[in-house]
Length: 52
Image (cartoon, rainbow, N blue to C red; front, top):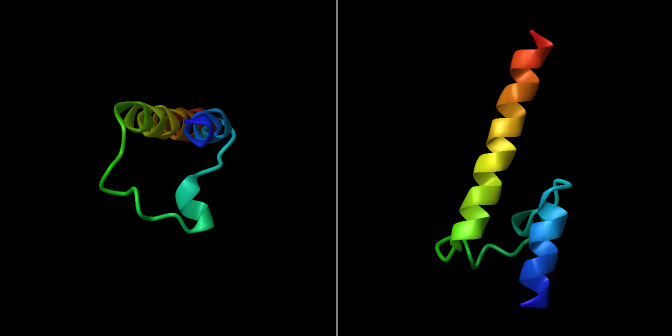
């Protein structure tokens, strides 16, 4: 549980468990992981729109 919490916190800074070779959880994502990914995508879209 501690590692999952660390993943959430570090996820806001761009760290991702798949970057370090853990691909075993690709099919077993939790709902909060999906929310974090959605937030990151939204932030990237906003950054692109602001750059135009």
